[in-house]
Image: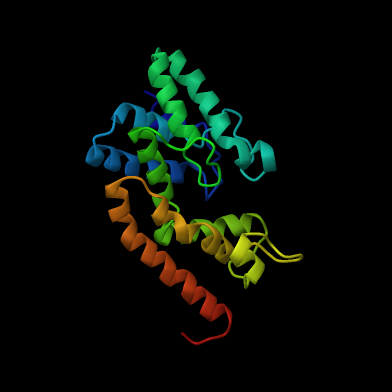
Amino acid sequence: MPTIDQARLWYPADDPVHGFDHVLRVYALAEYLAISEGADLKIVRAAALLHDASIDILPPYSGEIGRMNHQHLSAELAQEVLAAEGWSSKDIAAVQHAIRAHRFRENTEPPRTLEAQVVFDADKLDAIGAIGAARAIAYAARRGEPAYAPPSENFLNSGRLEAEERHSAYHEYRYKLIHLKDRLHTETARRLAQDRHQQMVDFFEALARQAGGLPG
């Protein structure tokens, strides 16, 4: 089993969105979900530690090489790391599936196993609530985008930006984060998501009002 100290080397030290703090939170959430749901802890723990990993520590916002394909890069690293530890091909494949299936925007390989569903749910729980709001704003800031900009009707209806429209943290909330609770697989995650979802909604709707100059 990869250790936490070993896994720390696969993540950039200065990434407030997908760095090692995120991995540790997902790891803890995944353990909790796995125990509650009866999933294989060995598979879940390894997948949680490796789900955003890169041996080259690629820049997290570097287009196709970075975030867009990171689940495949992380799955390849998992093969290398776990094979070196003597894991069976069956268990390695289970970990790789959980890693490849954890993304919201990539649904060509949905989570088919309980272990993959647990890792998916843990990752999404960390994207909502107070921590999810903080991560969304940090992600926008790293890309030079604002915390709030008014979304166009076109964006609200299709997810496509108008010319000159900024993709703010509020855009990410309306496009992705507000829907995450409905994409969760396990009963335990759906229960945990209730309070987190409402915390996030309250924050972003207050942000929209206050950014427009309203007092409340």
